[in-house]
Structures are given as structure tokens and as C-alpha cells.
Amino acid sequence: MTIEVMACPRCGASASQRFYGPCESCRGQLRAIFHGEGRDIVVAEYVPKMNVTPNAVALKDD
Image 1 (cartoon, helix red, strand yellow):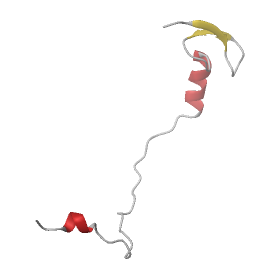
Image 2 (cartoon, one colour; image 1 turned 60 degrees about the vertical axis):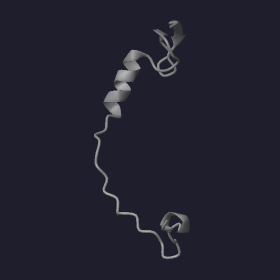
Image 3 (cartoon, helix red, strand yellow; image 1 turned 180 degrees about the vertical axis):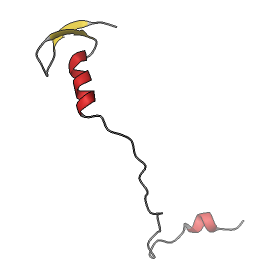
Image 4 (tube, one colour; image 1 turned 45 degrees about the vertical axis):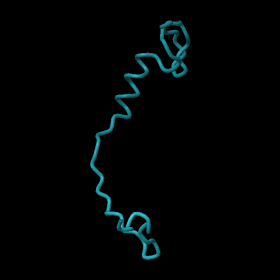
């Protein structure tokens, strides 16, 4: 693991980081601004169209 000093692309301050990206303070600000709550999405059950037929091999009786 190599830690390098690089400039933050958001504020321009130099920070010691493993990967290129926003510094720790900018990440904290971004998390506070764009924090969102998870939610459950209800989706209707899939109903195949009438022209879709079952696979004949899967339905074959041995």
C-alpha cells in the first residue's frame, strides 16, 4: 500500500491518500450534502407477453 501526496481535485489542498480523489474533509462535506435514505421500491410482478411460450425441452416428460 503506497500513500502519496496529491492535490484534492475539489479544493486543491494537498493530502496524503492511497487513491486519487477528494480529501477527507471534502468527502465529509459531500456525504453531508448528498446523504440519502434508502427506500423500498415496489415493482409489479413480471407477466410474460402472450407470444412468449415455455421452452419445449423444459416441458418434455421423460
